[in-house]
Structures are given as C-alpha cells and as structure tokens.
Image: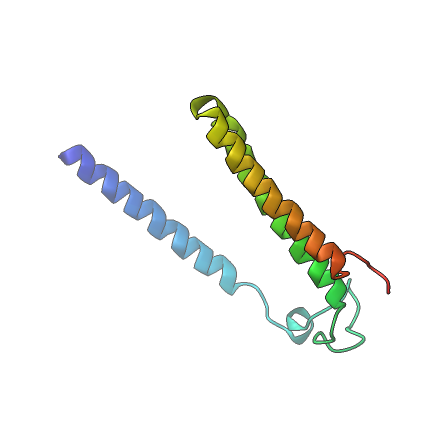
Length: 117
C-alpha cells in the first residue's frame, strides 16, 4: 500500500513540476504584432485569407479521402478470409466492390474527375 502511495505522489510531483515549467517557459515568449500576424511563406498576406478556392479541388480531395478509407476497410477483410466461409466472404467482397465501383462510375459521369472544363 505504501509503494502505491509513493508512486502516486511521485507521479503527482513530476506532473506538477512539468506544468509549472511549461507555464514559466510559455510566459517568456514575447507577443508582438509581427509574431501574431498571419503570413504567407514569410511575406505579408496579399489578399484576404477568406478567398474562395476551387470547388473541383475540394471534390477530388473528398473523393480521395473516401477511397482511402475504403481501402483501409478492405485490408481487414483480407485478413479474416481464412476464418470465414468462402461463399459469404466472396459475396461480401463483391457487394463492397460493386458499391465502390458504382460510386466511382457515378462520380465519373457527373464530371467530378475532370479537372478542367
């Protein structure tokens, strides 16, 4: 029981010491106007940061994220192949790939994958 109390006290002392050290170090930083202003590659901003960006870039980025997540879903399915029934496994994979390919076909037909119009 005494060893647990010593360990808890040591953890408390170390964590409190680190918190005080961080607060002392962070207070020493000077906050002037130049350091607090936004910058673009070291230069003053040329225009507002709220300018609109290409919606085509956004759609391709979202599409990339969707396919990236779907590939992360496929990997565990490959690992459990030896533990499941083959016909069930094949039907699950075929359904998943059908949904994936039909989504890609839908995006292609809507023109999301075309960068310039």
